[in-house]
Length: 258
Image (cartoon, rainbow, N blue to C red; front, side, top):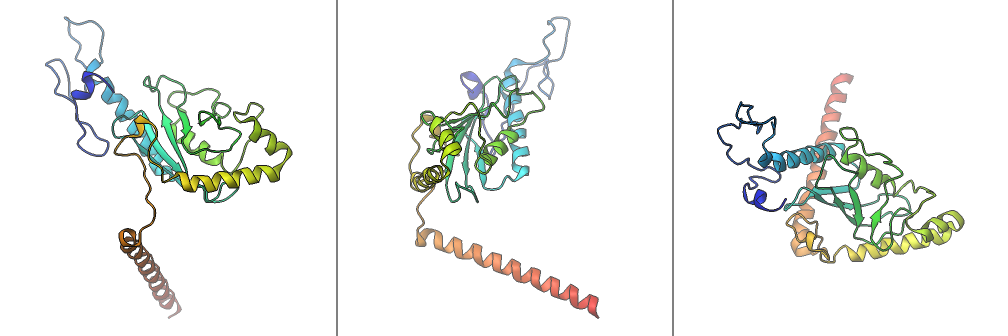
């Protein structure tokens, strides 16, 4: 969003904006009322940015309900066209890694190609360009179909690429593709080094200007004085929940036996 459109509205919540007041020919929905004094334009242009944002927020709501394991994503506060994400692989060659990425959505959404996935954390992977960090997803989405292809499909595909590493004929990282094909031991060593480095890089501050955003995902080194109380409270809550479930099961079992 840029220009006067950004000045015309403001956020009232995490992801909700308030539409500016319409004129006499504009209904509540933001659709211009047809009259004899106007042409056949039904959409009020000043509302287009709002429709785009609400469409993208509905995509984010769908993603939130999918609960993709080990993946955390949030749209930027300043623009809905950039989403910040982190992937924590739970098994496989990249286990224990922490890989930060950005999802870049074209301003012509939804009349555009698939979003770009740019890894900020160096990732040794056949699909990731070692210079730009962009992950190629074209082989999985040869055609981005409006209304059918969803952003959550992209995130899910990116997540699965950490576990089921494709042996593509058009790799972005030629070295990674060759080692995966001819020397698994060396490939595994590269992945191990990649994981160790990711655990260090995760504490670095944003390098890109577009990452200077309130919703950018930042990490702090564990500090007992700051995080200890919260950690103990969380663990105690888990123990209490476990005990409560155990008591309920015991009571139900005793009831049926009697």
